[in-house]
Length: 154
Image 1 (cartoon, rainbow, N blue to C red):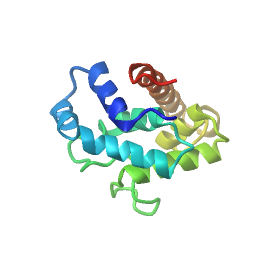
Image 2: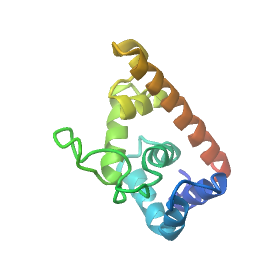
Image 3: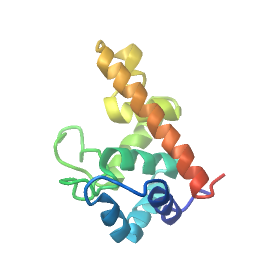
């Protein structure tokens, strides 16, 4: 059984006692709503572990609380509207699609979420994109594991 959204949001708050701007207050104020969003993504896209989804959403937009995010989790509404923020379900759909494209490998799926490539070190002609994608992917997976432990997951 996956870790609940409520436990994962509580884990974020316990792991990060200080955050930039008003992000912590926003997450505290929206705790229940964010938890429901996490649980909704788990039901809609069971191939994505909730810890991974929360780690991506926190890394991308501090769970939608960054200025100008409007509650979105870091993915556009579709590829034709790259600068129109999507919802939590848009982000989960992109991550779920990345799991398929990258053959179920979580690190590759997270890198694809950020860079558009499963392995940007090999697939990109830009060394910078490769480094950014790799660093981002490893940071998100490490956060997901910390969340899992803090939330009492498997």
